[in-house]
Length: 247
Image (cartoon, rainbow, N blue to C red; front, top):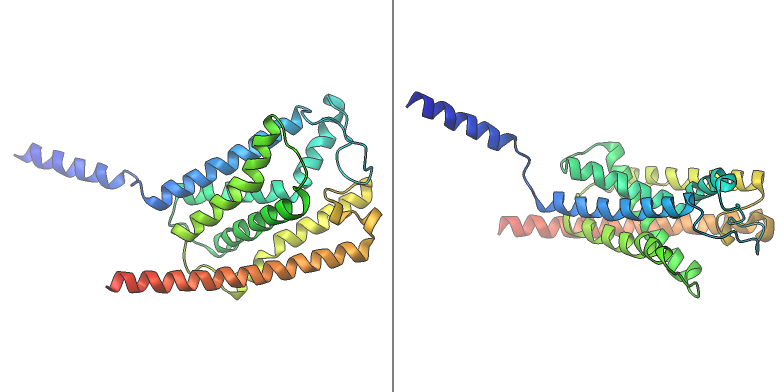
């Protein structure tokens, strides 16, 4: 009898220590996996010299030689793209939430909002301004689709379904602009040094600094409006969830 009691206690402790599989954990895991696949595939293609050099526009990235000679330049260009930064942040934040769905801190709230703002802007700008008319073949088709279509849509859907809720406020919105602003400063400073930029709308050599800064200003305003919309959506979902629980 005593032995049976000890066995029951031991089994109860083991069960309580086993991490439960919840809907948030599953969705965060899927989101993280998809984002990492896009990032790692893009890294592999760039590191291996998959893309041939493009010298048609000297003030834009793409003229690094294939092979080991152009490896450093290709990778530095790669990490300068906003697309890569936004997908990396999604991959990291979703991984952290997958490992511990109840993780919460001021920094985590800011980064969670960054995953939404940055990946939405990535998807919208690419599909409206940069992508039309561009043909993607081979592995680039999958890399482009993952980073510019699937991960943006999936990240928004996961947030709508499992949140986390009530993380967005005005202070979080203000702090979420820091990473995009730092990226813009880095891209412009590096572009001024090497004479090449990641995107045509940041091409100071062609469009001029005033035009580029005006474009960045517009994007920041759009990001703030988008964040406020997300905060409103979050409030509606939170209120609906509370009413559903009461009933």
